[in-house]
Image 1 (cartoon, rainbow, N blue to C red):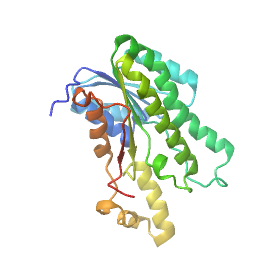
Image 2: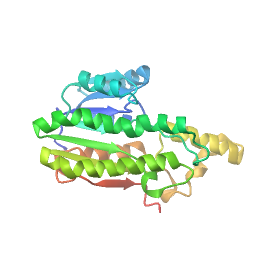
Image 3: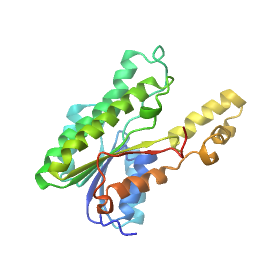
Image 4: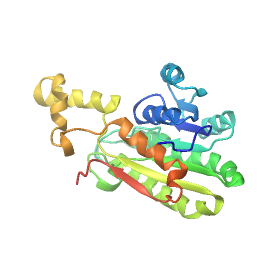
Length: 254
């Protein structure tokens, strides 16, 4: 299916691995030129090299810590005109209210919550001036499932859900669509690492980490590319009446 986005410029934060990398790969397959942003310069270049080898698109990389507002401004200034923004950077640590101290909580939110907000604030005006643009926020299922053992993530994701809807409610007048995606358990590198640690503690064998996913819908975690294909469809003209929507991708788990 031709998603009619060939030649568009897309900026993907957290684009060196996991869901962000998968989104970048699908965008490239559809003919989008890319700007990938993450903190690890080498991981970014490795991802960019792999994408360039398979697709006839331009792939630029910017190594930056988006928890800094100054860094966000620098990234947007370097990136130039952007048609599609995919906010994905950030991993909030688990823990209960008693376990997550204030410093850890604020540091995580600076990247995941305020990073998303700052990227939107900096890119939005140019999109509005052109009366064209799409913002995709990859948020997280904890924002609606509210697990107490992931309280900083649950609260941060819930805040981003509200932000996404509020931004979308005014953005249509500027020709901009804003969509959120709430992935559940997705088989990223980080998820596998955490599962291996948990399997070692629970079973005494890290290699048994797939057993932890047997209770999930369909007996498995989701795949990054399953989220990516949905995100890229939302970014395309084939989904041009979709805005203010937050889609949950978790296999139907309650």
